Length: 119
Image (cartoon, rainbow, N blue to C red; front, side):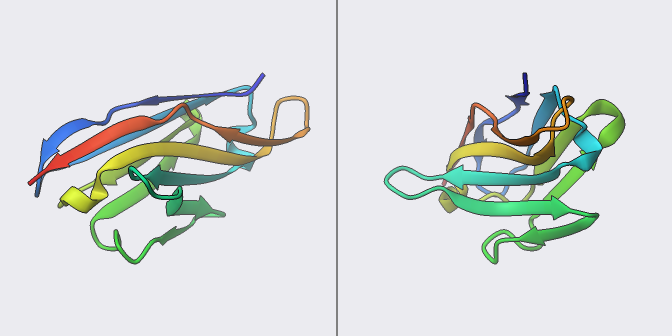
């Protein structure tokens, strides 16, 4: 069974930093593409950052402020968020897509972590 466990998040003042972590189990982690999404109140879920084959891509709104990374040995992905703005407020979800330990295609989501940026 694939599980993604998120940690981090919380309340931070504008200009501050936070790091989100997402630890996976049940996956061949190194064979999965990774992504972070967020959903602000009243808005649809949007892609924030992705990491595929060593290439990172970012939404225009977070370029230069957020960094996505992975540690395959720990089956963990990270989202380092610097220079946070109130508009970054939302629930952040990690996402993986690739193979589970039974070599089946897996498409999994974390439970979500609330990030609140105060002005």
